[in-house]
Image: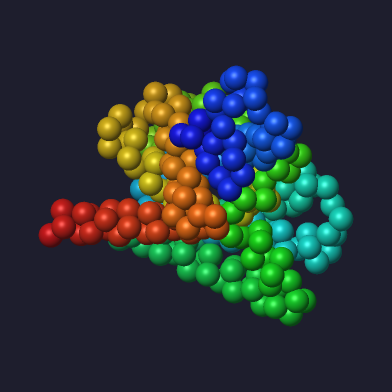
Length: 307
């Protein structure tokens, strides 16, 4: 998928011409400045969001939770709006840190609400997250409309990689580093997913593991939102698919989750580039369709089994 992504687009980039040395300067510039950074950004974003979704499912002990169903991405978007209003000239890295702080606060609020609400059905957990995200998104929309920033916010939340160029995606390497950190702590997340009492009895510092997980989820989500916008449902689809095949031991499954997340985003981006060529459909829109179908299928399967 990564190889195909390098050679799909409006501008012609030919593998044969590059290998034979017949590529002109324009073709090489498009490859180096646009196609290669875009492909790397897709891989890093897909892998990071899939791993972030896995961590959230472990911490909340619910298969329906991921950053787009827990208010995390909406909180990161609110952080971006705060930056646009108060300090629009901040460097990209500082924008990501501000968005990470807001995402951390939103995710912490979601987990705090879960502790206070009696949950008789697993479906209630994502519903609470969607309602929280709706409230946060409504606040963001109000202030964006009030200060005439609706168009700017649309660019931050569309989930579009068409504007990714060399020099505008490097913040995603932070997501790559955090993905590696999640793999190092994979066994701790696996134990934490069994519950606070059980993990504490095994000698695990549950609070520290939860804090580490929240930091990873928040910073990965913020780096993706800052670079390309919201990518919905990756953290829902990929962990559940991999878990069905390989189980729940993160030390074993996390690399496959990262690779599958990257592959899914690459496929959706290629589809978005091909379906309406020479125009593009944002990858976030394609993921929204695929993810919605998968989410409904999960709900219906659970309801059928319960019946």
